Image 1 (tube, rainbow, N blue to C red):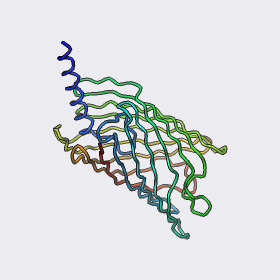
Image 2: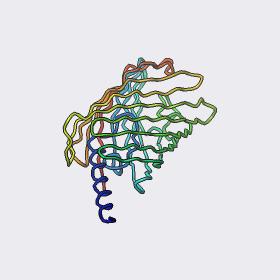
Image 3: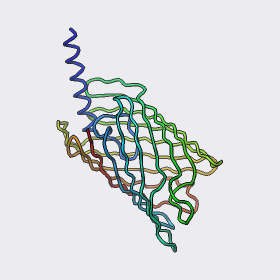
Image 4: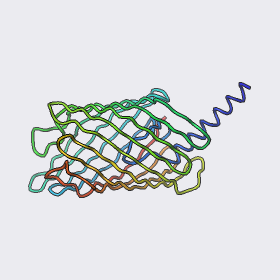
Length: 259
């Protein structure tokens, strides 16, 4: 009986890893899954930001590291280049983030899983703010988030809700993201999959306004260790960006799994 239970558990784990890899994580929304391409490795992407009075290019590099199957830590360091109208372009390192994730619950079944985790992120004011345009916010920020996801072989639904505390008396804000993903190719292992995502990504700044984006995207999983993804964020409401209305944000990136 014990041997049969062990075999069943291992089979479920292999099946789940296959599901997680072939479904893929959302492009703009976080994921509660910390295995495969969402786990230990490197993630980087380029954000091309078009605003009314400026253009910017942001290239974050993220290094997540799994301490265990339930606990992950990581660091995100962004390179930024900002070109305001009528001013010189400024480039350099922006605000660095350090995060930790801990899985709170999971329920795995045949060809499906439901998972949730808590995420704590600390943002440090490492970006230069002494000259315009500023490369950082100049303040410390702490974000506590709850991330959930229900993933099957046919679709995935993800939700991320967080509260961001800002120092120096600046207004706090709420972060809310919802994503829906659909794989287009038959399931196989090692995974080679094409995923479509549709996301809503929002940020409500108290006493200021709201930023809400509709974010369609596409993702190609080229194997067990690498994926490529691209998406565009179209503003539905950017009342929090007074004087800096956003036209669009284009993202192109990759994730590489390292053991």
